[in-house]
Image (tube, rainbow, N blue to C red; front, top):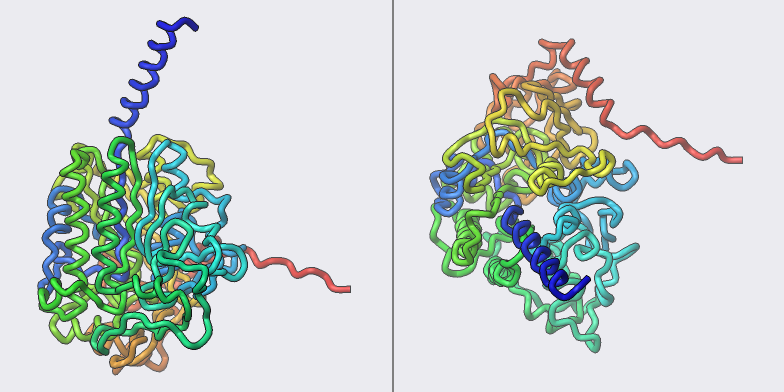
Length: 518
């Protein structure tokens, strides 16, 4: 190839890459922690004000029937990133609860994730925020590179809280290392435990530190600075990657307990620290939007704001309720449980020129649908085994489908006994109660019938905070007529119960055959 031809070829390649960068949208996925269906003013909240998120709703689309992959934090993240129902994970054993301090990476590195999907298309990718999916193989060794982890799942960059803001180790991690780590002062899990920030009782539960050593790393960590720090990191990363398509996964610690907003947000809501933490979250969203606008990226960016599960009726949630705030609106139940309040979540999407502004959709969608949807956004074909349980709901974002895109959805609470199924207007729960927390109000683990009665929700199976004697052995609700699940129709429609039970069985993994013993 002569010099002139080589120059022409090089210019053509540059033009092609530039054209692709212009046509491929940036994607920012903001994944709040424990943000309930009623926690935003655009979803009816009056004791908190969320102008930045409300603006996104005015300029985009708000969904009223969106669901998290689980009613629990870790499995919900698993489902979001993989497109697979969390009960299928771990060779069919499932991921049902929050991961522990030494949990190995829960996602198989051979599985397609959102990060890898975008990376396959040439995107810059980052996960900035709460991880809570484990690190390494076997028992996590916090004194070694935390691999495999986010970097092995398609993310070029990671910064954030490795576990959860209520659980140790209370440090930040950047890529595969603890920030401020000193090999001369390794992290231990023996006494004396290192100092970390503590807060008054009204801030909610923060587990006492069970990690020692790593004094410098522990000193860097500060709950009240975390939200702003994560936002600064995200804004900086966007600026550094503005010249190529990028995907930012931004899972915040807001609004998980302890409720520790930065000082400037304290006292700004009418719902206590719980509401103030929501206000900080709204500010975080606004900062990212403003960053996109300043860098001339807003017109070619799909922004999604949603949550990992419903609101939790912990100390903060209870104080907010006393102030007149209903974290899950009038929906039944709370985080960890399978009732609608535990896993029906806010979902707002803005994409200028693609999503009609100021619109509302009642299409049934789930966190597991993001994999197939983002494949469609980036014009990628994904093998069926990798697409898992994900469905392409892009038409629900950009159009007005005449029929439901998704007619069935498995609903996953904390307890396997309450794995449930949605089909059309019907939701079937194969046992009484919610399958989540059962504590009485006043306790951190408040939930179930006791909490339902306390907040004044009505359910035909519940009286005085308890399941009635003689209540049906399962639950069936018509969500079209009764979205707040006030009337259990289990005994009235036995044929529907039978159909739904049979349908649920088709989703459950087949029991493994036991090896014969000699």
